[in-house]
Image (cartoon, rainbow, N blue to C red; front, top):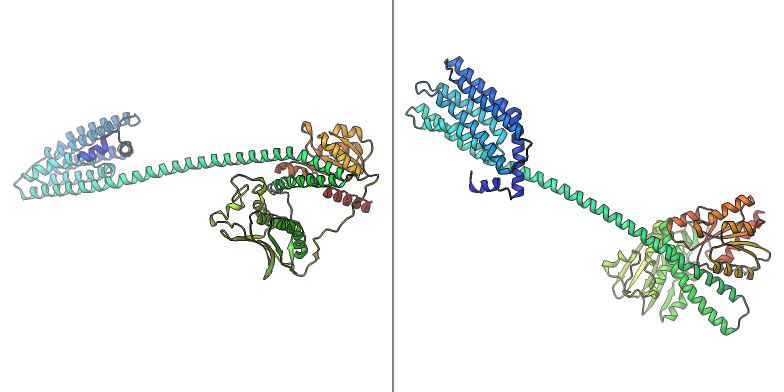
Length: 594
């Protein structure tokens, strides 16, 4: 055994090599305890019987007794130490002793029956030793030192004796032994390299499997942490949004009620400024609400055919003055196209795109246009703004991602506009394309189906006169006193008779008869909800009046719960015009049904 090989096998501080040898030793020991010792014992018996029957030589039986005694001792020793912890060097030398002793026993046999006048028994013994060497090769060829520890003591004595003989037949037998040893040494060397390579691959595969398992566990842990963080983010946004909406909701109601009272011109101007500030805050909160509604999956598209020009004109009336105030040009190309999709969701998409274009454009302007491409209409919003770099064209659709706003200037929005646009496009099942040149501008292209001969509606809402709801009784249930007072003031200014309560129990106390309308906050104190109020009133009165649920929640689960009540869902801070129209429509539908 060479020094390099000995170093590789014997050095216990080289863990990979020690591990390799331990695996080899385990396999070798299993083979020895299995067919190895039994096969050697049967081959020895065959050899002794053949010498006796053919040559009347009893020497083989004495040798067989020694061989079986050694085999028995080897079996007992290996059985005793096979499961014991042992260093690689000690296990190596143990197996060296086992194979060397076996080789010596087989090497002694031809010397015992050596007879120059009759070389035939030696040829027989040589064939048996070669046969036994082939079996041993199958057992321990993975370790060349162990195989050499057996094969050299088994063959070398006969080879030496034969080479020093003057008999040509003996010389030929010695040469054959030399060639056999040389070939088997080379075979063992190759087998050892192949076995070690195979074991190394096995260990590498096991390490890769373990590494993949560890990485999979880490990814699963990271995913769980991301889900928890997302839940925490949603909970924080929902709580913050709800707490902010309450005072803004009350403020909006007070401002509306104040506007219907007698005030002078200067006061009206201040009121308009306050209303504008309130509307700006409401717009930011409604952006969060739109995003939460998308996450909750409570947006259900209602596709229909409608004319785009009506929507374009409406958006131009709204955003044109804003563009003028920024020194920008707002242009809208007229179109005769009608499309088949949800008009309110398309309007929300275009509002976000146009608002985003104006926000990031300092010179030039914004163009809104539409062109037909086969059965599809391409609705395009062009701007001459800062543009979007190629590496950011996916990121801009992520929530809270903003370009050029490291200071988080609230005037530049929350970074949710394009995330909402992408979510709405997914909800509608339509395609959104983006093309941009950094420093020159961008174009967002919404691709929707053209209306092909169906019913086309007009998206413009009819102008309604503000009606007085004289004599209409309304029960308002809200746990915020400021909201109750503001809602009572507003509804009274509209001619309603208003009852207020802060819980289901107080609602039952103040309401002796069925009111015409029920307006209830969804989240009340002590864990109560608007659904609990509806259930209590339904059980007391036998039926429920037309009901509005007003909520400041943006948590997806809460939105789904509120929508499942079947009441009309409105959101804080409430647009009073939206409330007025909703009440008017509800009462008109009730009258028509009655």
